[in-house]
Length: 188
Image 1 (cartoon, rainbow, N blue to C red):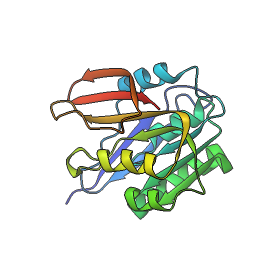
Image 2 (cartoon, rainbow, N blue to C red; image 1 turned 120 degrees about the horizontal axis):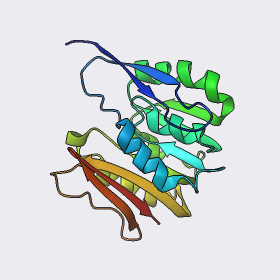
Image 3 (cartoon, one colour; image 1 turned 90 degrees about the vertical axis):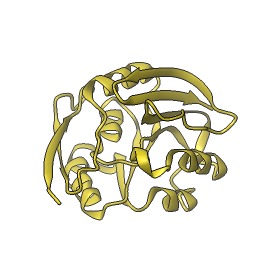
Image 4 (tube, rainbow, N blue to C red; image 1 turned 30 degrees about the horizontal axis):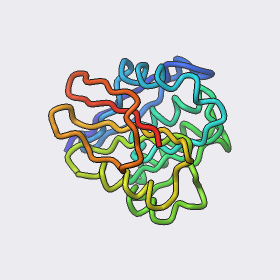
């Protein structure tokens, strides 16, 4: 098992250009590319101010950090691997202080007890592709009342797999297919 080190760059907002470092011990971390994050945040640019954000499968923390840098009021980042969660806390707390909350937990388990943190205006659902977590995570967000009435939900999946099924009340706003990725933005 090799350890890989990497960086992601915050591409906009207050901390534009700041690099976040991550360690990937199993080679399973797949940060969203700069180009894809730029597309996503162009989609969201006029709706980030004062938003409560959930980055459900945080990994490198790029999506949550980008939202905070661009004016989100608060972000909860859920990361299953304790070492990564500690690393996210070490890097993001000095930048965002009390606006960022890092939770070391399994995302699906966390969703069952997360009502004290929500509701969220924006949720990022970008799990490892091969684990089948997207549909259950979206269902739990809805079932547990963790989204505001007009919340937006970003879902990233493998382009050549069937598109994930999302709750019936979600409307597709934007979609982009690039490389191996299907990026979708939904609204409740």
